[in-house]
Amino acid sequence: MSGTLSVVGLGPGPERWITPEAHEALEAATDLVGYRTYLARLAPKPGQRVHDSDNGDELMRARHALSLAREGAHVAVVSGGDPGVFAMAAAVFEAIELGPPELRALDVRVLPGVTAMLAAAARLGAPLGNDFCAINLSDNLKPWHVIERRLTLAAEADFAIALYNPASRARPEQVHRAFALLRAVRDAATVVVFAKAIGRPDEEVHVTTLGAADPGFADMRTLLLFGASTTRVLERPGRAPWVYTPRRVEDERA
Ligand code: SAH
Image (tube, rainbow, N blue to C red):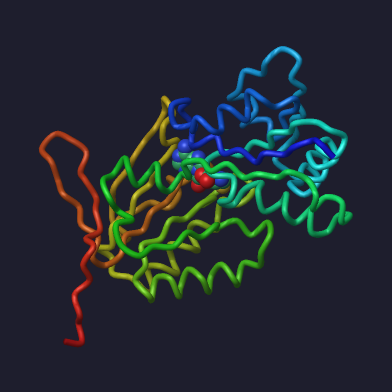
């Protein structure tokens, strides 16, 4: 089998946030596979075959990509952000695990990209400067009670939290439930950031507090950041504030 499969991260939006390695893989590909919205960001080369699909079944998309590679194609499976963060890379390995043993002989590579939480954090300053966790609020692939438990425990442990997929047309209510959970655990003064369409022309960053935030502002292009108790907002006259979380955590038991 001489085909190859690269799982490529396109970053959150702008061309200059795509790594040179990812560019090379996209150039070298005979076949591009991915969700329509991500593929639309690329200009396919003449002769390159484009296999777009709806956002639906990632496992089916992964199987299709693997079968193309088995036939000798050089396949690039594209994801937004980083392909390993709530995206296609895990679907590819699941398809390999469940598929015929020959798939394990394939040359499969994962090429990292800038994930949304890091792009958003960079815009703000350094909100993820201390311990943090990332939680996907979508219950498409996991039970809601698991999400609730993880959110609550992360809040109790005082992690900064990056919340991916906070809302969509099909799931408008869950972000309100997530806020209710966090409000039960964290101080109302906790810093909250809505980072919308980071790196895109319609980028919007909204810094507020857990007490004052309107969860309804979140949509499917928003990454939500909840600060730790130590996260600070540095106001600047006439400009957007900086947000950072100090490296140091004081020993309250000392
Ligand atoms: N693999 C992607 C995440 C896919 S999940 C990555 O690493 O970034 C999709 C979610 O990512 C969206 O619902 C949103 O929460 C977040 N996201 C993706 N692109 C974004 C952007 N440009 N600005 C803000 N959030 C974004």
